[in-house]
Length: 306
Image (cartoon, rainbow, N blue to C red; front, top):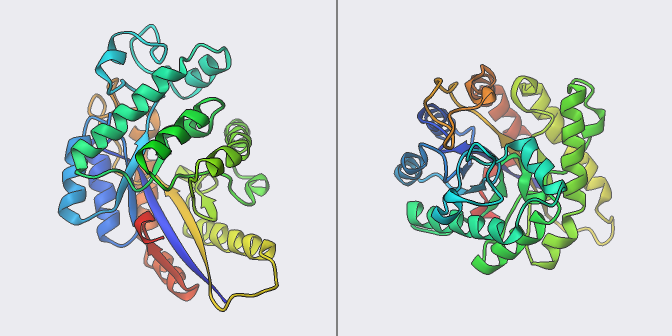
């Protein structure tokens, strides 16, 4: 008999006031059970206050690709910055890394500064820490990321390997290429994280259901398919009386950012200003999704409940 614990994580908390508003509304509606904070987001301090006010479980969304560093020394001059004085960007960071232009000691310095700022804003260390735009599973970065988690005693992270991803023919080819790269990086990260005693949920979902691709049926199918896939791989003997399978669903709900308001130092990006954020919010709060969780014996929780 399998029971499921589902962590629905609202990423990019702190990005802008309208993102914060949407994520809080989702939490209060029981549609999101956990959030991931961008400490370099323009509304990070307000997000931390909202988490305290509404008792929202909150972890750290480590960011090395968008906006500005939080470490004062690195803001002035570092390998993490482009000529414009900001992080290199989602693909720019990957390109710079592949050319060996990123100094790993500076990566560690910035990650530690973000953990320290998280502690300052929230009053506690993050129970979980993942990477904005999946930077935490990239070559070289994965080792430094794991060291930081181990040093601070942060037990949980995210490993974005999504069951059934290759069967999702509705994902645009260019996006699928990026997702397949994330998957490959993640597969190469498993041993590194394991060696450092870091844990993550049994199942990750969130690439196939992101933005315009999110629907009630897409989430239902992704969860059901993933559970079947996972349970088929669990040894039949001995069978425990009750086995709990843990799942993280990564989501990005919110109200679209207003131009020039928000972001991580250089204004909001296109995705944050698009209708897709609101589409996710409206999908997640639909009663039929909540009903599906109940009928499937799926309990919403946070990383603190694992």
